[in-house]
Image 1 (cartoon, rainbow, N blue to C red):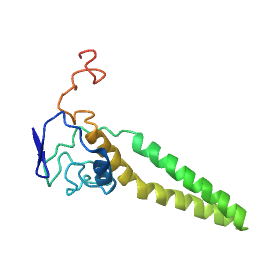
Image 2 (image 1 turned 90 degrees about the vertical axis):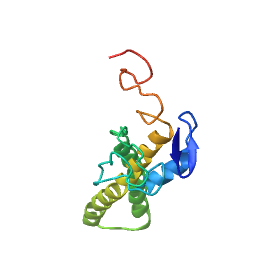
Image 3 (image 1 turned 180 degrees about the vertical axis):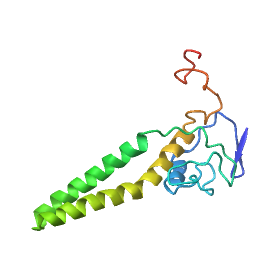
Image 4 (image 1 turned 90 degrees about the horizontal axis):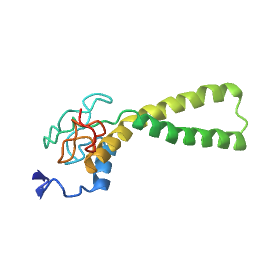
Length: 146
């Protein structure tokens, strides 16, 4: 049994995914929404400083950058097309503005997106966030033992 926010939950009770992802987008603990999830720019804390929820099981790997690249690519692509359609900006302005905006958007979005990915893993009880530890199997789903 685990206790979060005054509620006692057994290990098989589904965790609400939307509040967890909302907390992750705010770079807060997916369980309590109070403690900070990052100790550095992208370094996830091993445990929440507020509720002691274990966050060391997270494995976000390359998913956050892929999500950020997809979102930023659509924003920048639409921005370039719109700028060309409604104005006659000189080439040097495009060469300066769009790369700077791309870098700024990527840096601004990376931490909230990674927080949301970690929170989503927590809500779905993936990678050791659940009641059953599958760390000794190859596929993490009860497959071949190591």
